[in-house]
Length: 324
Image (cartoon, rainbow, N blue to C red):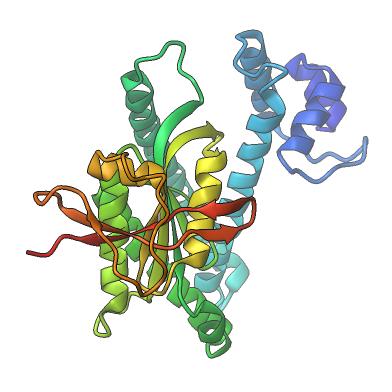
């Protein structure tokens, strides 16, 4: 079918159909191109029904559909590359790719639906646990960035395949550590992972485990540094925004290799102490008081304030596990 025929059969104005396709990232077709099938008609019908139900309203339609398009475009590129790598070794790669698509894609689609439903159930449980009603996109969270130390120099020494394998091993190991401690990965940005946790101690445990593994030369996990901030965070379309996120990023940028730096909000959540939060910390290399009760699982050493972008006097603490 042509795009006009699809829109007519779905009962959707052609302008709305073209807007949805553009937001999804689909290539534009000419009016007479027969590039559509019954699946496109059904998709437009479902979109129309979601609009009528108020789910795809004017304020959320563009952002939500655009996010779908980006996410599935990346997923499709990766899946196609994976199948192509397998098919290329066959005597007839085109036929082999067709066979793989026929047998593999239905299974992949079922697993994608399963994973989505499981995450939907988890997200719903978290939303219902929030006492405020209606559920606000702003809530307190621990935000943590974990950054590979020496990534640039290491990447220069690896070819493309080795670099991809190295980053995938890092992401796989980091994902396991973060989820084991109750965190949720927001995104990976090359050599960096951004995750959140409802509790500051969950983020602290995950960050400390990763820095400890990175310091072990016998562990394949790369050396990392981390920054954690705790405070109000805006959650939108699977991403997080706000000053708390910015502070966590700034702390990571000034952390030493193998170190975990935390902000005042995280310090207060981990120790329950606020009385000396406004005092100037000691300089680098100088003696510092250990904060927190003796029974605490962590020790936090206040260090010199730092000047970073947008935060001229940011107060960090170095986080460590308490030793007997």
